[in-house]
Image (cartoon, rainbow, N blue to C red; front, top):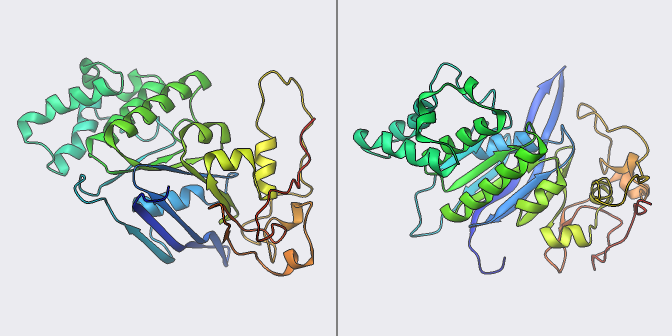
Length: 320
């Protein structure tokens, strides 16, 4: 997105934890940027560090090293971050009526005079497809999809300029997922939001993203715009993820599964963390971790087997 100012710049960000006398590098030297008004998605298997990174960006956790720099465009709304969590059943206080939950960030940040908060709550409920009367109900009176709509309304109540979405549809039925994704996409366009979207589902990410970062054991292995990533994935791990996506009309397919188990973050392999499962692994992969290198077409890849020209090489055979 040449010419678009950068809203968030993440540089060499790390978040480490101590477990069983060892250091777990949940996020290990991650760098990326998000242009204003765009959606950047992080994908990868469970345990790769996506949610930890999202919590650091949202200010719910502190980085061990590295930096975050937010630069809101001049003339826009003030910089505020809100987060939508994965589980709509756990993210709402069961003892609070819905109206109170949505009103709380408005009152706490003094975004509206006290006599206007009720009207603002009704407006937000309407924007997410609920009725004003729903504000008098408790969370247990709603379905999972309706609860997630309430959580979205609560996030919008804080008038964010930057939205962090941590797998906001993974706990929902497929038909409800589509409704929530359409709602999020519409609201982000209407509000002019910049977003970080976390998911393990590439089909979901393809729908919502401007650019995508693929994570493996705490590191980014590939970053590209959505169209480029799906048309010509460079990294073998990205190719593996794309081959595993179900395809309508193709029936049963044989999918190539990499050898070996997912390494433990307590004891990651030396060199490239993916090398024990990679069909293109060479001696250098076992000794030296590849750097995330930006190619000429604005795709960044961390793989010794991808040359400087960055031409796509198919490491994973296509599924039959």
